[in-house]
Length: 240
Length: 240
DNA sequence: CGGATTGTTGATAAAGTTCAAACACGGTGG
DNA sequence: CCACCGTGTTTGAACTTTATCAACAATCCG
Image (tube, rainbow over all chains, first blue to last red; front, side, top):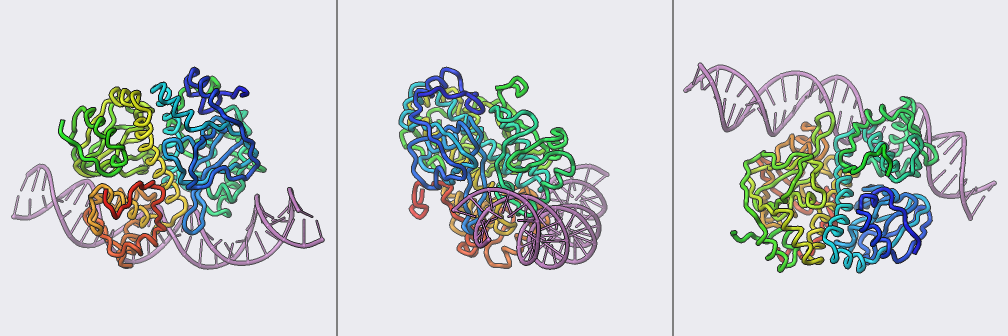
């Protein structure tokens, strides 16, 4: 089994755990863009660590409307919650081409049984995910269109920084405007207008799947961005 | 130590685990209404199981605006995520008078070390919490004022049913309109209007902390309510 | 080429916010 | 006892934000 890179969220796992975890990787899958990895309700016996590419999770309402509930960057376990839950309440799909490392639940359970500390470290990953969920609720409920979109872009840029996918200015975020509308709970047309406002205010541009941040301080201010909820364990400046 | 009742969410824990858990309860605290149990950022070495009363969790934005991210009913572990995380990203406070059972993290860690299955069952509780977070994101982003409020009321009524706090028609939900506004991400004025609309449509009334459901089917339809995300393990009709 | 998806703009409608005022209620201090 | 204050509820009116409808250009893909 080839060596995986310990970047992004999994960088928070203790190194010994990471070494043990790597040995449990059953295989690495490659998925095309806009592919469904998991359907809501499916029973899972593996969990996936995202290695390359971006993924999203979304729930579908009765009226067929789609709401993104999460965006995943490399280093995220995208469906680790299926280990305690068994099945998922949402879909998981790729945005661009992705590579995922698959871990059998049986092996992960054995790992948890061996070390309570490791079990807790895995648990913690899913709890940071939950903290991000809470923040999304905050963003939807308390921020207006421009602030909400700015906030989402700040979060995503920071998370891309943490997994080495950004250079401080340009970030690959392959979301179309319709998809961005599903992230922010806004209409497509309004997403377009707010993006124009952000562009004309000199804060950032989002074109062809690339976010270019022109004035990060202004963007973070417009988005009321405070990354406390990410439970950052290391200084972002120091790299990860 | 007095015996605790296994109701609501903790009813999902296997009985042997529940017995072991009870023995770990260090003490039971009583909290007055509108009391802060935990401040965001505080380091915790205990987690609390809500026995009686209702609690909410909320985050506070830079502008001082408050967003509720969760409502807790009896049987919920309100801050179990502090066990893997150590500190919380939000406040926890009571709505009415509450009783909480406190469990030292050290004891819970020992319990997890003894049984991987039990560890996973505790983890699962926090993952259902996360699923509810996702649903709140959906509610905020994809439902309009009336649908969103109806949806929240359906969820809360169902969860109160599951912990034996509702009779199918009347439910204690001691939220004021300003608080409900923080739950739904709406202005107080608009909450008042939507409540009037729900009342005049004959669906439900909310007065003096009591929700009275007059037409459940209509309310669930108006709120697009589908409880799949609650991962209900037992038939609600069969009690719990 | 033709069709589908995406991005953009304008006009109009709807939803929700803000401001303001009135009323009820419980507590508090004179 | 009453006056007063803060909080919660309700309503009206003006205003802002966002959605919806419609049209069109650009791009990608078969």
